Image (cartoon, rainbow, N blue to C red; front, top):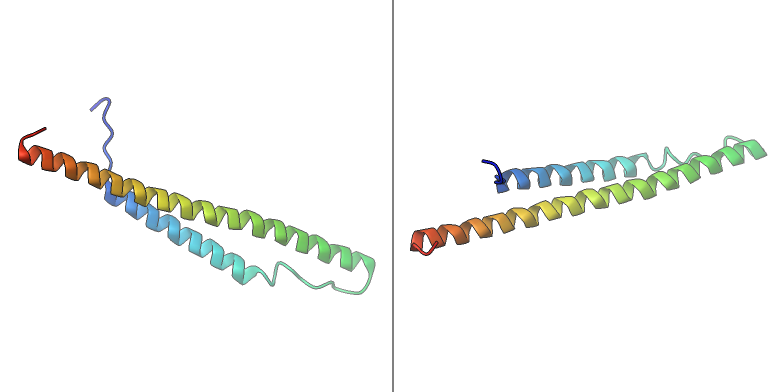
Length: 103
């Protein structure tokens, strides 16, 4: 049907659930790896301290980026749920109008 878009609200809700699950897995993975990403200096020398600071800096950057990704996944899931509800409302109103013979 050219010019028509078919939307399955159930598919939108399923996608939202998958995005929420992905966000949860990503956040959980980051939390469990946090200690490993921030090793203490191997020694008291300058190179060890510099290497440890590098790892910590990289870990902080990863935390920031991953947190943003988790937020984006959750916001996208929420938007899909809102859109699914909106499609259901429109379908229900059209159904009511057709049933009443006013469409």
